[in-house]
Image (cartoon, rainbow, N blue to C red; front, side, top):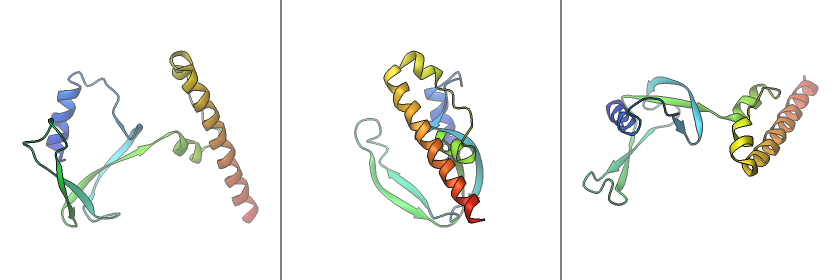
Length: 127
């Protein structure tokens, strides 16, 4: 998908521009233009436009090593905690609206905190 296709898709799906955008449930942290070969080769889907919206429209893929790509970088809760195991993680929306999910997330956040603190401690010991 190129930039024009992405803009058109966003305009179609969210004409007001107010819906949160996520990639794999994670927030977009920043974007950058890179060479297509950077950090692995660019993988593009080959789509049969006559099938789009009716059924599975992907009919192949193309690997590209020249030109440029716009890369969107994401960060999730585990990434935030890896950088700062004591960072504030707001689960209040889950607590209010999805209590069973809240309990799962609360435990997961605590597990990540413990893991990252243990890693930090191990690194300090090795210095």
